[in-house]
Image (cartoon, rainbow, N blue to C red; front, side, top):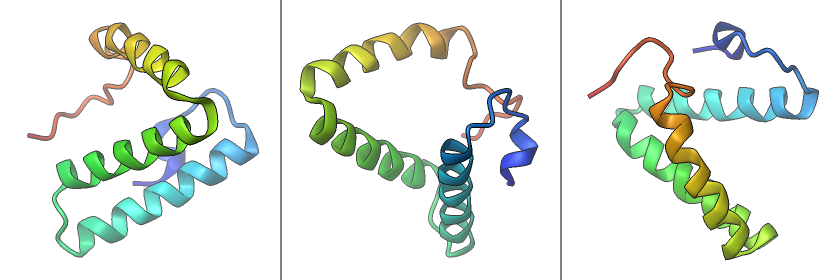
Length: 83
C-alpha cells in the first residue's frame, strides 16, 4: 500500500514522510510472513511507548480515551476489514 492510496487531506511533509516509512516497513513485514495483526500490535506498542516517553502517561491515556469514539465513527476504516 502506498501513502498516496490513502488520499489524506493534510499533506504535512514530516507526517507524509513518516507514514511512508511506516507503510514500507509494514509491507516488508507482511512480505516476510508477519501477520497483519502482529504488525498492528507492534506498531501500537511502539507508538504508545514513544508517546508516553515524550508526553507522559496522563496525556497518552487522554489520547487513547479519545480514540474510542473516532474508531466507532469509522474514522480509521478504509473500506476493508482484515480478520
